[in-house]
Amino acid sequence: MRTRLVVVFLVPLVAILLSLGGAAGWSASRSIQQAVFTQQLGDLGYFVTSARQALRTDTRAVVEGEARRFADVYGIDVAVFDLAGSVWASGGGDDRVLTDGEAEQLRLALSGRRAEAPEAVFPWEFSETTMVEPVFDDGDVIGAVMISTPVDAPRTAILQQLLILGAVGLVSVALGVLLVVRLAGWVLAPVRRLDEAMAAIERGEMDARVVDDTGPPELRRMTRVFNGMAGEIERVLARQQEFALNASHELRNPLNALLLRVEHLATGLDDDWRDDVEETREEGRRMTRILETLLGLARSGRAESLLAAVDLSTLVERRVDAWGEVAGPRGISFRRSGPAGVMCVTDRTIVESALDAVIDNAVKFSPSGGVIELSVEEDGEVRRLDVRDHGPGLSADEVASATERFWRSSATDETPGSGLGLAIATDLLESVGGELRVSSPADGGLRVTLIVRNGVFE
Image 1 (cartoon, rainbow, N blue to C red):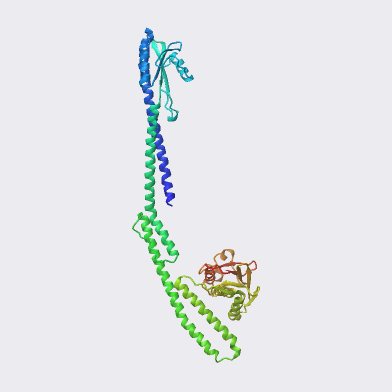
Image 2 (cartoon, rainbow, N blue to C red):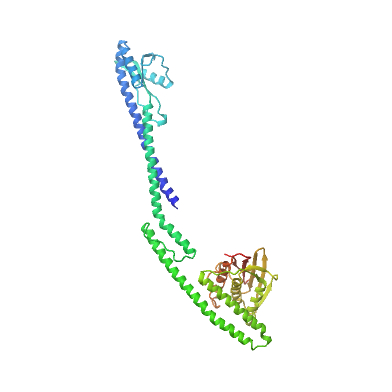
């Protein structure tokens, strides 16, 4: 973000400096060129006066002496031409060769056209300048004076001006970058601290807070709001954790008492009750495992997965037997399919609890006398547990919301429930790297697929 801010501020700054610097450079170059042209016109006027007298009297010594002095002192080449276009007097000899441009200027001057200052050009186009002025005597042209001025000194002055402007521009850009970086740091420091605090809270460090005494007033207010929100979240989570701890702890005592009563009752029953007693013991042990998982979740914020090899086929059979007592009074039956001995390295308690939540949902919404179909499939490292009921089902729009907490279909409002079953199953499976998929078969009902990955944990 800091880079983007620097670019956003720097691009307009560079554009403004380039515009202003270009205008200033052009103005300085034009001013220097105009000064050269003005000086050249003044020199032309001086030599035109001298050349008029010399041409009248046909004495070139004075003009040639002045021309040689100009050439020696200023490096300016001066030449006087007669009406025939031949060099009449010069400070550098009579062997001067005219360029096409100079020849054209000489022709125009001998025809009576006065010299004009040329237009200013770009510095890199500024080269040796030549001007030709006609010499008049009583209104008649009797010759012409040509002055060629070198531009080394003016070009050096123009280059110096451009270098100064460039240095000023670079310094301005450097100062602008420094200012923008400092400003960005001042503005973004609270944002960076907010980001770090949110990342810390995501890692479970609920006491992370942000100092709100730096940055712009708007960000300070946002920081205070964030600190207040984080504090409230910490208080809510603490209350939830305390409730989970208390509830789990309080449930252990009556559960242990219940298991002791089962053992006591078992001593007075004959062998015909042995299977029922064992099933009751297994349910009690399963409840104990669930409570231990809940306690671990309340203490650390997440369940501690116990990696073990689980026979999913056997697990489904046992849960079907356990739910048969609940589904039996309504005439609901279970139909299981799939191979036996489908093994998976995962957390038995979590998968079992998720499957119970799904079966509970299927039993709840199945019609009396209906059938719930369960299947187990193995595909590489993926295991699929399908639970299919033949109840009212869900529409395509409702399927997307089925795993949301407290969501219930408007068509089943009269059926008791809290809307948490599939949401809890989803959370449980995600904790062991799995997922829950809900779909509506074409012939009605609802299919819920539990996907468990072999040996994968978050």
